[in-house]
Image (cartoon, rainbow, N blue to C red; front, side, top):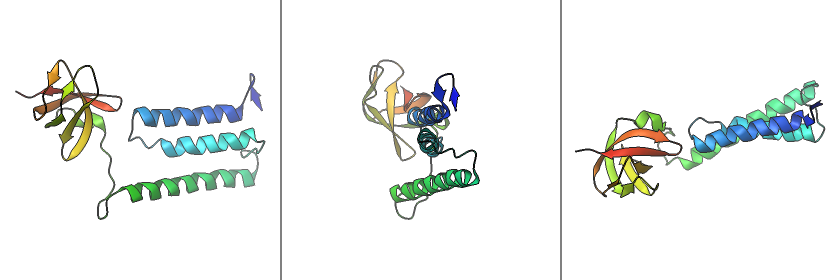
Length: 152
């Protein structure tokens, strides 16, 4: 099983790594589970276990996917404070919202911290510096931080 010098196992591992990379740079899309499953399936293929051609192999793949999903759900539930449901907020949904700058933000670094609706986010100023305690508005999101401007 090879595609111009690459085995299917390496291609599956590469796809899983790509999904995990997307999750790192854009959290909240829940790509960690499928990425992990693809890496595990790719490793099985590299070890010579052809999970796609036998019924037992297909069951093993489905079992691994279910086990990875259960472990992830368990891990997320342990990270959530008692009595609260876990939730995610896409940074794109913050655009236009206002908050309070907790730590000074400037355009040159990601050191700024802002509180929006009780959540703390890494922030960068659109231009110049914005002092601690200033009211801000989110104007965009980039990677794992938001870009803010001071509200006059």
